[in-house]
Length: 256
Length: 256
DNA sequence: CTGTGTATCTCGCGA
DNA sequence: TCGCGAGGTACACAG
Image (cartoon, rainbow over all chains, first blue to last red; front, side, top):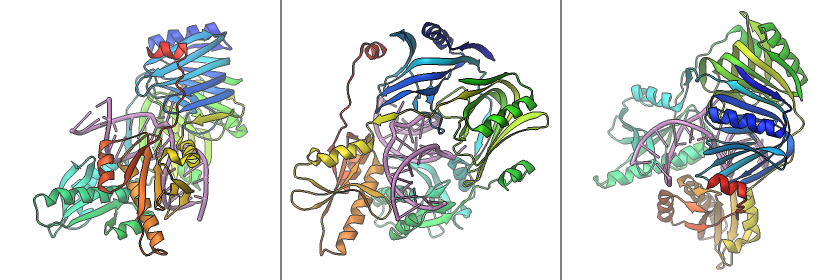
């Protein structure tokens, strides 16, 4: 799996190494050591010489990690041009991107370890608990939101954006449901209000008068959001994706 | 800088290695090889056996990278408990976190390379072009928004959230300015409308009548946002953080 | 290509 | 802690 490793390579060595593996696009490339990083694009940034870790994935994405946090210090999600060369006696990696026009340059002063790791295609990855799943669940069992609710549409497109669930209640009133997988904030209330307004406008083109209900469905809601919700005459309903509560010995020991 | 490296370690070896370096919290730890990853917390996920790269930073953050994308496949931003042990003949890394209660487990089937990299403290990192900078600029030169505008407050706290710029125009009318560093969307319009409403309510407690203007200041705006803005009687002003347009030979060659 | 919305968002700042 | 908002957000998806 470790295809190649260089220890404290010379600039030219590193450049050759990088160029070779960038070409094949088969390996995850890593370089660790002292470097400067410059970014220019949507914003601009400079990082003084420090000990950083560079990752280049086979898909061309680039990330430079500092010793803290999950987020890279600098990155490039999709590179259109990825080149390594020697300039002023130092190896430089340049990751460029059009649209938006952006450039990340990593200037290696003291590369310590460079590796090329062979990576097979990614294996099956399943994530559960997303909003999409919640939507599917509630589309099947709208009574979890309110008895008598009938779902007319999912992801109903309306004046930019889609309404999570569009429904009719037991009295025939139209209902806009906005789902959130986490605690609902004021943003969600604004979003819901926007959709309700769109639906009202839409219905007023065919109906004389309309009453459209707006329901925010989430496991929880912040206090300010709740206030604004009530202020706007919208409603809140608790919904929850069932989480398997495994209490394996390991987990128990780690949390207790 | 490369403190220690193991090639194809036995489970017990890897566990010992991890435990030792987790204790010192001095090194960035890396393990690459075949593993399974399980996550359970705000959501839940499983990844089949695959070739992944594990990074553990000195601050305790954990990330598991698959061969694609900037985002890790699994991660843990801040771990309260980080342990490595052998179970059923396999080395397991467990990263646990209270609040939210979350657990990431990496089960190593075939660890290939494990490294401990010495990392010095992060060097000076300067980002320019942020909204904060834009705010500072416009607070100093409010005439860039509108002639005669006087800034009364920055980050004025109001009903949860802060108003970027609170000002008064040449006619003495109060003005709420919402800044965006990028293209303004409907969200920004909602936000601005919310703030204008808050200010109106606030002023109505001391004034008989009020007229509060709302200005969205950004380099650009989406069409739907513009429509909603006009609909709500709010205004848009183009502002731009000056971007240095370096056209160094390198950049030119990379983009042309 | 833009526009929109989700995210285990992360991260930092305040109350 | 919670709540809010920014982010070079990344990323997927629709029109």
